Length: 512
Image 1 (cartoon, rainbow, N blue to C red):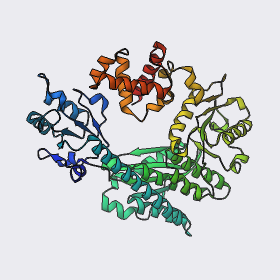
Image 2 (image 1 turned 180 degrees about the vertical axis):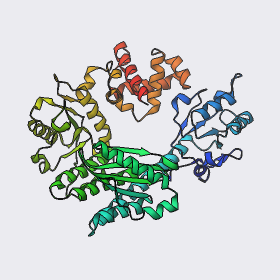
Image 3 (image 1 turned 60 degrees about the vertical axis):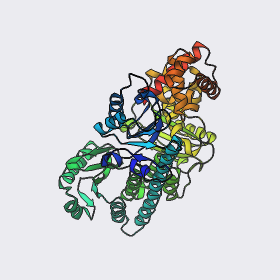
Image 4 (image 1 turned 120 degrees about the vertical axis):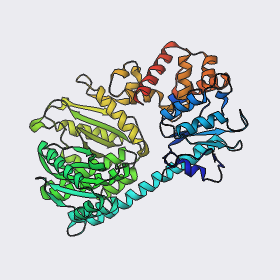
């Protein structure tokens, strides 16, 4: 489970004290992070679901407005307020307690001996544990589904197993929108009251199949959540898989469903369609690999007797410009790639072909794909910088942004080359955030440095007003700016470097 305010209050080592009765729903709501700030209005730097920790120095001035302060926090979706005592005041101010009670914002005291970082670390540990548990669950579910697929009636067993592991209604429609599998559907409809949901799903399955295009959709009929995904290729759809339940699918649920779509597609295609179904499995593996779940990709590809790429990797996105015969827009993958370089993973994702592997293998695969086209010049390609398996999500974003920058004059673009062009053109391009992050990537995991850089630039490089805005000593801010200059490899004393940094920050903030 993700951390909650109640869980933090129950942790003996933190010794937190809830002030007031507290609203059960608010105390039990998921918490994503804890952020410390004594700013009069910290909301521009907070996300919904976060805990704000403060020592209360902002309330020492005569014009302090605790009620307005708390109201802003509540509107921003702050999960709770933690007050560090014996720093600025002895105990928690009564007017702050009253303001929190008025809007239902949980308020707790943090003893002087407990550093704020201990609370943040506790939340981070609980989030990591919850994510690890979900990943472990997904691994077990995918193994169980893989074993079910090996049974004599593998298709029905796969659908039944998906129902079991998700504890949801699962329906498999054929190409005529008739339900062919979902043996527990009727009894689960009676138990969960999803009759209306099933009716809506049937109608949506018919609509998706009538379009003849690979697609997915999400419905919310009768208080339920229904996720539908087509099976098969465009103009030759084999069916639709639908999952119905009371809550949205999380990332682990979706990973399992995606793997089942690939397995069902494999079973439906059979014979001459086996290679296409295997491509669907690779697409599922590519998706989870690019989502940072390399262990799940290992499980998926292991079912094909293949391995995920390892070592120093790059990601490439390829796309054919213009319409191809029969409405196809994705470049065909030539046979040599199908059984070629074992170090490279090739998959079709939407209108793109994605290639993941070491630089030499990816470059060779791109040339094979280009040479298989009637017009090799119609193939556009974007390549990322080098990444590890754990950093492929970032590399995928870079490759997409580089592909968006490709043109007839420059059909192959590398993300590394884009960073040398400056960032003043990024805000008008689809990949602005990814390309800006290439400039400020060393700061991406340090919101304090990003916040300090922004405040300093807003103050036109003047340290004293920026330090006052941040609530830190000017020497502290100078040290942070020096650290930023060292990390990004730029001297911020000049106008050009400051302008680039400001535009990069604007691109990042506009995408938040």
